[in-house]
Image (cartoon, rainbow, N blue to C red; front, side, top):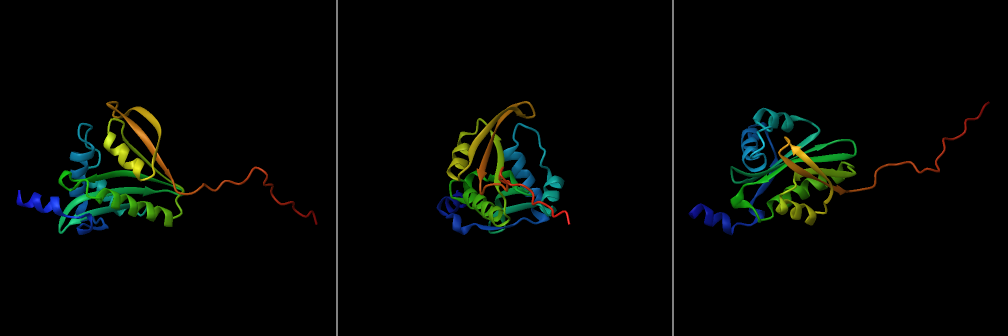
Length: 179
């Protein structure tokens, strides 16, 4: 109870964000198993998370209360699109702005990297997550029945950061001088 009382009174500012290190892989994997993948099988085990942490196109960010891992996010960066693959915060630490800070940090990183849009999927039944992402500027795009191992539907969401680079229809290549 004493530890929970301290958690209940803490602010999100007391939580430190940092880039994940390979030593964080097991903790992230266990949080993913218990908080994200529950009932769906365990795809993001420690070796897979460790590969993500060391992948130069993926950013893994952790939230720590002292030495304790209390939240994390992992986002893969492509040429113009980023994919927020995982986001979780331990239940006693929720509703304190930690997930918001994680996502806002990743959104700003995507903006700096020139990313045009951020994509994600979530369980279609997860109303709290839908509300959370809507407050961060994400919009639902597609419902995918059976997305999660044929067991559950997913809602795909999108946040546009900038318009993609598309040449206008009126553009024509310059004429070459025949001489």
